[in-house]
Length: 199
Image 1 (cartoon, rainbow, N blue to C red):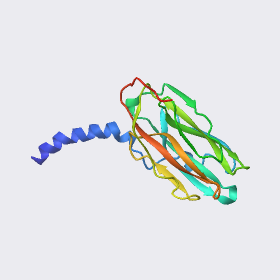
Image 2 (image 1 turned 90 degrees about the horizontal axis):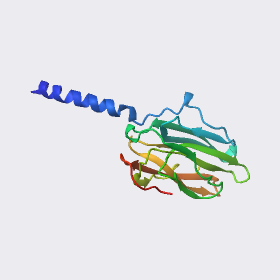
Image 3 (image 1 turned 180 degrees about the vertical axis):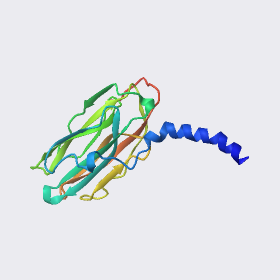
Image 4 (image 1 turned 135 degrees about the horizontal axis):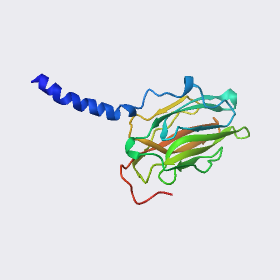
């Protein structure tokens, strides 16, 4: 009896593993030799390869370096059910020294970040690089906890599920600590085209 069950379930497990093994998020490869995408007090532009989205964000804070952070990102391919991105664009700039909330317009997913450091404010301005996948729509959206947990701490945010995507973020800025806390906006995406879009 055990041999019969093994013969029945082994092919099913093999097929399931083959379909989803590419979408296990973690541990993340943050690029070549785990290098940072920026140096302190300098701007940077990071974009995932075509068809991939941001799935992890890592950062360390240094008060002596202008209260700035080093940043690194990990990308993974979007689920096959989403298909290829139909268009990508840079969102509006979120100014340094202010709190802000932004999601990718047109139902887009975050596929990159661009940032410029401003020494007069000891903060950065930010832009999201967003990609839209056909006419897929977000649902079951939620905010992550704050990253980092406290101002001045290291940050390591990871997506643990292959069908959840970062669509944006809300941030608070501390004028005392000259640092930012992030809550990422995470959503699932429909597997069918939908007739509406957000703005």
